[in-house]
Each structure stands twice: as C-alpha cells, then as structure tokens.
Image (cartoon, rainbow, N blue to C red; front, side, top):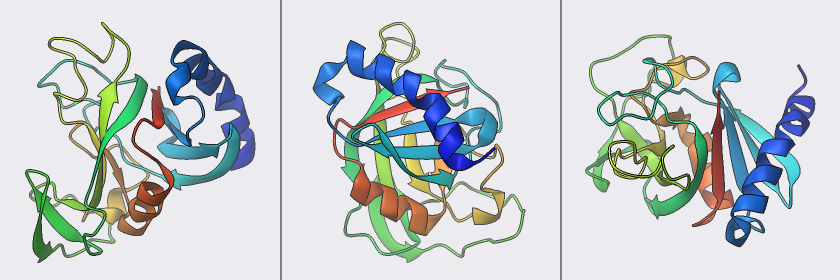
Length: 185
C-alpha cells in the first residue's frame, strides 16, 4: 500500500487523540503502525513522511516486565541526546561518548544498544498505558536509535520503538515535547 494512502487511513486515530487531548493537538505527531512496522509523521494533521521501525519481538502489551510494545495514545515526555553524535551509545539515558558498530545485516547481536537520540514516551490513557503496572513512562518506553539497523522493519526490540540512527535524528528534530505518538496494532 502506498505510504500516503496508509497515512490517510490512520488519520482518524489522530483525530480521536486531538479531541481527547486538545492541548497536544497543534503539535507535530507520529503514528506507529505495528503490523506494518512503520512510523508516520504528521504536521497540522497532514502526512509528512514515514520511517521503518522495529517494535517488540515479544508482541503487543502493556504490563510492566513484559518487554512488549504498548499501544494507545502517548506523548513525548522527554527528548534526550540532542547534542549526541551519530551512533553514540546511551547508558541510563546518558551519552557515553562510545559509538556503536552498526549492524546492517539481519543479525541479532548480544545487547540492546540505545543510540543517537531518545524520545521518552508517556502514556496518556489511564488504565491503558498510564497507571500502576502498565505505565509506559515508568516502563522506559522510548523511540530510539539502534545498532541493529538490519532488523529495522521487523519486530526485534524489547518493548521500545527502534529506528535507524539517521531516521531517529530526523524525527527528534520534528517532534516536540508533548507531541502525540499514537501506537496502533
């Protein structure tokens, strides 16, 4: 399916979010479609572009400790690493000045490097992705770069939304604190 057509089909999700949470409505937004392993970027409710992503290899879910990608309406709570270099590794959300070796083949390596940028998500829906035992922010659900770029486009993460390093750098510059990130099955 053509990307712009798919993006238009997802617009009702953005409309619902804007109606429920109007304080976020005027900001650029993203919708992650897990079944397509794609992130669609919108500005003023108009499709801008899309990126391939990797969501959890354990599937969809909200429970703490599940390593699953949570669905629902989120927003960017924190942006971390705006000055980090391409492929710079983060440990506990701090840049290390070490750089990951980018794996371009479909190979799962040991470890899960968080690289280049972090967009830390907070769930907005009480009882869905916000609250005790299911809170996306408390679960450290991020959009971030990865050293396993060869696995982008297929479920491979431990709950987060992974992107290629240049793509997450570009997205980081487009989304703002409080921008919607809607995650849909």
